[in-house]
Length: 133
Length: 170
Image 1 (cartoon, rainbow over the protein chains, first blue to last red):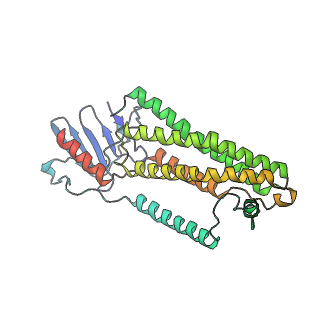
Image 2 (image 1 turned 30 degrees about the horizontal axis):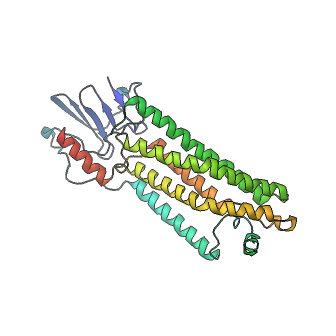
Image 3 (image 1 turned 45 degrees about the vertical axis):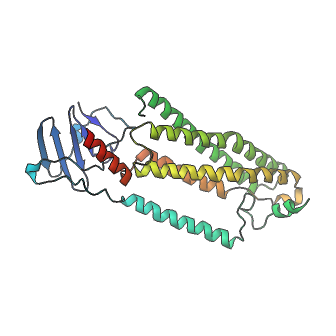
């Protein structure tokens, strides 16, 4: 039985009955490990043939964990260093910082007015109304 | 504690319901906010503000709190965790941010309702509406939704260490 774990649009991991079958998209290699018999396949190939209708969208995969690899292949698992920050997180952070800066600039040049009733109109009656006893 | 399949699906259904309801409530609020800005009719503006207050306090705020709570249950009750993947962490931060801004914003809305009810025809055009906050809030909620749907890869150093420990034990 083959189960497809979450990242279906970028196939990265599949589980056979006994062990993981993983693809690391950065290193572009596929590792297969079946019980006590290990098999490592290097190179790119389409793994769609492994899919079945057992999609489990709410379970995490070990996508970022380094793959187990057979020592005979010379590929050693890198368990010492944590993964770096993904590119999408960096882009997201930069966009967020820019938006925060824009909001701060808007508040500063808006004279500090920030609440409801102060947007969408060049001037507001609310301040005058609020100041009335 | 990892939830079982049935409980997980129940929690997921609740979380999706509350989250989508939150988005729907904000869209309704934003629509009324636009109406309050664009309308020249006093009764329309006053009705819009009263409706915004009711939707805000009795629909959006409860849905936001329920969404935050069920989101915590979903993250802590599944193997995703709250701090192990960037997408769960960012979703949590954005949800807390949106909820806090909402709770800080709603008292101002209640205040503006009183102002709108006391306004006359002459001041209606200058009363203004509420577009910025619900607009920004809607963008934040849609970003959270996209993150939750796509679950972009990326494990935090904490999640990586936890995964390493789990692998070492097993």
